[in-house]
Image: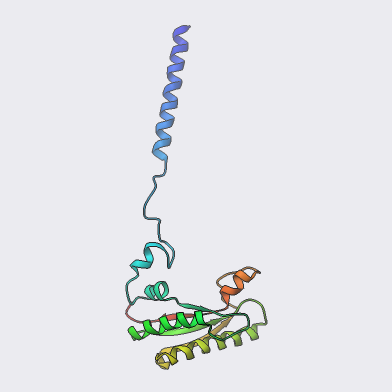
Amino acid sequence: MFTKIRQSRTFGIAVVITAAVALGACAKKPTQSGAGIGLGTGANASVAKPGSPQDFVVNVGDRVLFTVNSSSVNSEGKAILDRQAQWLSQYPNYNFTVEGHADERGTREYNLALGARRAAATKRYLISKGIASNRIKSLSFGKERPVAVCNDISCWSQNRRTVTVLNGGNS
């Protein structure tokens, strides 16, 4: 009887050790490659090839935000467009499109017109900084392509924008 209890105890310990080893083998090891996945953050910001579309988006900034019902470029927007103009002058092989957007409030027609005014204002500013007008195309999406969807100022403010999209080039 004593031997049977001892064998059972030894078997139980062996099962526990085997389970611990098996669980340890299945544990996920941490990796170092997860950092910097998003645009403009982490390691990717420094690895964007100069002159590439990624360089433009990450290091220059491709969008300008507007206030409610406005198509006037504010000082923050002018700073972004100044950087865009400098980059676009350095890389004249790119033509580009300025997309105008609006938030979800208002009629479709109103937002298309507002997006067009925002795109035109952005285009005019870039031309005033020396960018050739024949390189720039503008269009409006109105409220049809939001980047953030919610019924809150945090989303609306992201959707009132122009986005400069590079077309072609040696990327």
